Image (cartoon, rainbow, N blue to C red):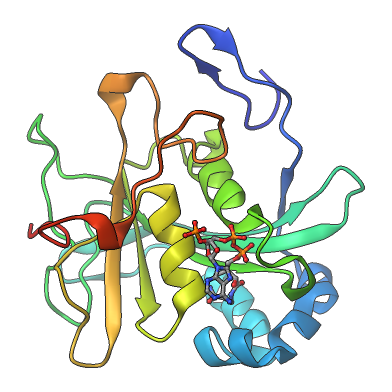
Length: 224
Ligand SMILES: CC(C)(COP(=O)(O)OP(=O)(O)OC[C@H]1O[C@@H](n2cnc3c(N)ncnc32)[C@H](O)[C@@H]1OP(=O)(O)O)[C@@H](O)C(=O)NCCC(=O)NCCS
């Protein structure tokens, strides 16, 4: 099967329009100007953020704290059919769960009793391409990619002022771990594999998928 292509309900998926390319020093230089945009700078960091993150990707694997271990650290440029970078996505894959702020908010056990292998995501879309549906499509594309096929649960954290980020991850099916932001104003989200549907993660990019809004949940989310 070609990169990122999966069979859904026995029907071969169409060839993806995007590919994931390992983030390198050269790649980081190609996209550093995205971080000059005030919103990217505010919610992720200034241009040096991407270079620093790339350095840390070499150092994180093997580190353990609070009973969780970083198994591997990913960073990818998402390339379009013209091999141009349109987004950057990545994060750490943890052996079991993802605690935030020293608390085991993300700790959970799957119905089969197995602690989930988890990944926390960072994500940025080229600011020139915002608000065209690319963000939600690329999150779903990455979550269903064979490179993260072992991941049961994805996490992300979004500033309460980051309307686009909240909408984007909500549109893919992320739900708040607890139904309120932290005292620092951060929403912590999770999205679990849907193994019983034969899908790994909600394919928000596929026609017919009914979107779940994190705001639309009466309980506002789940308390694990
Ligand atoms: C968050 C981000 C990835 C969204 O990318 P995008 O390609 O614009 O996302 P989409 O076009 O798929 O839009 C997804 C949703 O966000 C909404 N949205 C996009 N930009 C918005 C904005 N500026 N204000 C309010 N809503 C916005 C869209 O309407 C859509 O909502 P809907 O599903 O309810 O209709 C992009 O804004 C970004 O890179 N931001 C900076 C980095 C960041 O904040 N990352 C998240 C934390 S890791």
